[in-house]
Image: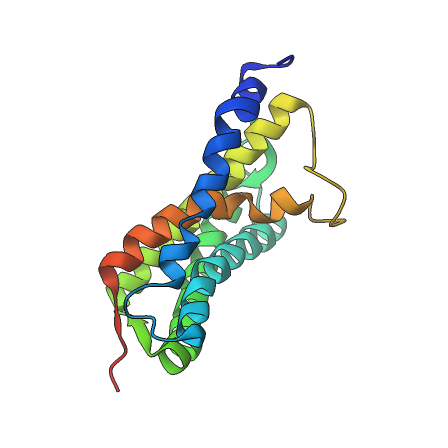
Length: 182
């Protein structure tokens, strides 16, 4: 493979690993406590919702208050304020999802400390996933993974974080999820 070492890695090893990471959605969707299609679907959407809350918070806080770059050599537009804002919005989004969707529709819940752990772990994993994909794109000399979603960088740019998030979500949910108190 011509190009830098990261591009060679992406083409070979990551081509096998990335699809395997998505497979973590299956055990989340079919968690023992998620009884029925609705409960499983609501539970499976939790890591997606918290990931997108993180992305939205990072983008918004970064644009409004971001001055200091997070890792300029990897992604010059990401800021420390954005990273912190992403975690704050992840916490708020996780609480709202737990309270208004997970508990009433799936009859499942994360205890307050579990919810905080989940939100922070997912927020960090989402941002690491974003940076990893930025590093691969930078090495390949590409800004966006495609032009399919104008302003969003492409399909991979919308879902890159989930590749890192899903194994973390599975690990936490398999230990901390419980039936909601009625």
